[in-house]
Each structure stands twice: as C-alpha cells, then as structure tokens.
Length: 358
Image (cartoon, rainbow, N blue to C red; front, side):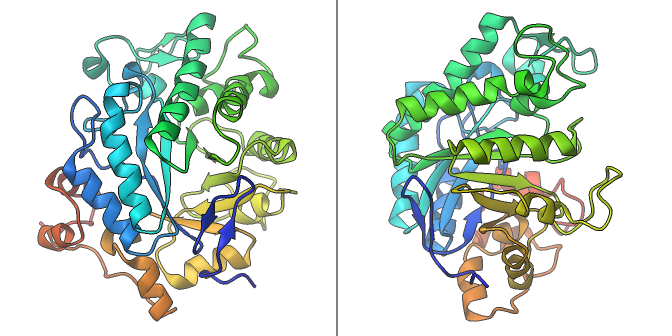
C-alpha cells in the first residue's frame, strides 16, 4: 500500500514530498481589486511550512465578471502579478508545490459586485444570468489560458481548473443548465468543448513541466455522475492533464443516483484506467486514518480543507501520530488566529454551523 509520506511525481515532472495537498478554500481575505493581502499570504504560506506537499490557493477568478465572492484573489490582470509572485515564492520556500486554482463563478457571480448580469451558458432566470455569446465563450477560454500563463510568469508550479461546484465550467458540463444550440451545447462532447480548449491552450502556451490539474464534482449541481465518469476516463486517456481532483464531499458515501449501489464515489473514479493522470480525493478527510483509506481505495493523494484550517501543520502531526484526530469543533476565534486565519476568514468560518464558538 502507498504510504501517505511517499513522494508523488506527476507526468509534467512536478513532485510532492508527500500525499497531502491543501484544498482550495474560500477565505475572503484578499483585497477588493483581487490583489493579494498579507492575511491570505500568511494563511497559505503557514500551511506550506506546516508540511503540505502541495499548497493550492483559493479559487482565483480569471475575469472581473467571474468574481464569486468578496475578497477573492484575482488572476485576470497583470496588476495581480506582484502579489501572485510573492505568494508562489512564499509557498515554495516552505518546500511545497505552489498551485493556483483558476475559476469563473458564471451564473453564481453576484450582480451587485460585478455591475452586470452574471454570465451563464444559457439564460437562467433563477440567478438572473444571461447566456454568453459564442464569441464571449471563446473569450472565457482565452481568459483561463491567459491566467495560466500569468501564473507561470508569477512562478507557480502549476494551476488547477475549477470545473466543480456549479461554477462556470461545471455549468457548461451540466445538461440542464447548458441548453445551448451552438458547438458548446448539446452532447457531452460539445458541453466539454470549452474545458478541452482551455486544457489545450494551457498545454500549448505554458512550459512542458507546468502542472495542470482539473477539479470536478461527480454529482449535485445538476451534474450527471455517469457523464462525469465518461469525461474523466476520456481526459485520462488523452493524458493532457497531470491530475484529476474529485471533490466528493464525502468520498466514502454511495452515489445518490440509482444504479451505483454497493460502490463508493471514490471507488468509481479510482477504477478508471487513469494512465499517467494522478487522482486526488477531497471530501471530509479529517484524520490520518481517513487519508490512508483514500490511498488504500486507489487515490494517489488527498486534499484536506477543514482539518487544515484547524491545524496548519496537519501532515506533520499525522506523520508523528498516524492516529491523529483534529481538535473538535467549535473552536474559539483566538484559536483560529493562532492557526493563521485573518479576521475576514474567521468571520466566514463563523457562518459554518458549529465551527466557531460564539
């Protein structure tokens, strides 16, 4: 069995010193213009120094109109380069692979924050979103690719495309949300066209050893599990990405869709013929035992979120004690301050039921 502290080498050549990657976590800590704040720098670099083999940023929007939440780190302008450069270097100084997650919120962008109706593959009355024109879809692809090039210039080891959680790339993959009649809608092949164009553009315009990952959701958000299994298999066969990050919410649960009884979500994706593509698992991985189980069931690495908020040095604690369990919630605000969270992040965590003590 693979050990949590074995190194992991990706096809592009990047290497994690262990199997722990910091999950991309919304934290609301950057400036209103998307430039990096000291609080976000401190939160992330503390995890890098705490032993994570790779440290991924929060979702970073590739267009101003793709903003998903206040205080979001931006990557849509060269004005963001100084902060991104500082952040990449700070993560790498902690002996951690630096990964920038690229994101567009699509119909989930708040209209009052972006100053216009949010964007979507098709008109959506629930979110007050308008359909992108074909030319605008092509501009979105270019924005993702340009953001990856910008991340490379800033010194990041790689990027992850955020195709999960009902954001724009996931909206294109949804047969319910995406009702387009052009070549970006209809069949799964067409609905995945934008994603493939971005992957191809990043591979063409970034250096060969630049790490490229993709995050997908297998269910919820109007996504069809069988389609995601097919897409994941196709992308693995094509071999253009280094890793697939499956955001499973709980990797050990059975799928909600009928027809998959007796299987866990993780086992379905671990059973894919992945070739050179590495599989990451995210979803309620809070302990050394849970992380080890993910690897035992076929994942190559794990992404931890809540446990990493509670313990900046989670990998080191698990290395010292494989039976380590994180401190129980709720925790105090002062506890989170000592773990490197700024006030905006703490306020956000206080909206998570039972996470922060009153």
